[in-house]
Length: 61
Image (cartoon, rainbow, N blue to C red):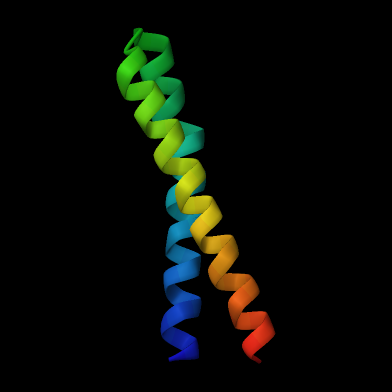
């Protein structure tokens, strides 16, 4: 269970970094404001969820 939650936290963190680094820049450079906003919100929520999972795992172990 710990390995599964650690893997999920890693994937969420990777997805958040990828969304913030690539998608947000593409959307903002093309002028797609709605997609830019949704990608930013999704990336920060993924980052927050991965942080919660990592803190939960550190407290559990």
